[in-house]
Image (cartoon, rainbow over all chains, first blue to last red; front, top):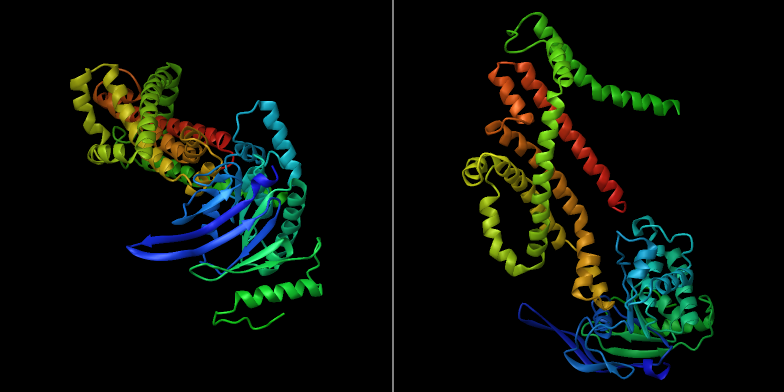
Length: 259
Length: 254
């Protein structure tokens, strides 16, 4: 399914109408993501990056423009595209096993379902926690369940909307490694939205910088570094500086330091 | 370990102290004959009456009969409460259609229903069951509506992404999120049903715990009345504990 999973966003504009007032959220977004690529989108809060993901998954419709995943034009949600949110959004009445099983969209025999669930519990490293309720898990573990649930249908594309935003710094670094490992193992195309520039440079093949509202693509920066990336290396600092510059170009609140 | 035992004992003492205090006060008041025994019988006499009512089977049979009525009425009331509640919770149209009716009928005390229900359904079992059903109906209805409405929209979004159809969303997301609320409705409904049966039996019946109380009053036996009242309280507590136990078993995650 290699070529089929290319993602193309063509001339997408999105506006909201709130109390009769028009608010432009996204402006002329053109973006292509190749199958198997890992693209990170960074932008200030309110720049429409979450809206962009919602349109990709089919929960929102572009005001103008089209989105294609492979040859399919996105008009409504499909399991072809999985999504992970900042909150794990698990069913509290289900166990880890139940929550992951809930993700399976196809009608499958019980045995096959069970096997998929076991495989994905292993994939996200939650062996031994199968019977735990989500309330008994830490934030990082909940997010692992959420990722597993999004992957059980083998989606061509996985969208991650600030998936690690609510986690503490150490867990976040750990989970970044985990996401990379899963990406390398599953070869799923991934688009991750974040406001953490380090995270974007650490994870992405490309870092797309959005301007503040209305969100426009300001820069598409290739991260030409082998993985695992060393956050303390010069190359890493160079790319990070590039993203920082782009990020704070027109804003008044310049960061106090340039790395 | 030792500390823990002391703590448990202390809490037990705290809980029993008021009961012992009331008993002592009761005993003292009776010893000095502050009230006539026809108004306030002594603890000993009440105890004797209790033993008599247990040994001749009156107390147990009265409670059983009342409990049977409650179960029948409660099942009818809560089942219809859940069904109507789900429909009203899901459909805005039905909700708008019925809400004014609910708002007018719900504040009517259950006792006020009894005369009408007796006129409609006769003085036998059906009118009593109907009052109890009505008593169980309202709390279940309101809590079910609330539970259905409080289903997490973020979880429903996830269900949409996973291509779940409306039926699956109802069964797998909306209903489970409503369960805790529905259970609260059960508990409240059971309480109301239990007080309804007593009221119904006091007005028109020749058996059951409510009748036992009225009968004792007619014979001017305050001890019998008090035993009846306490039995209602204790039995109600047992039922409530049973429902809470069930809730803990069924809603482990909650």
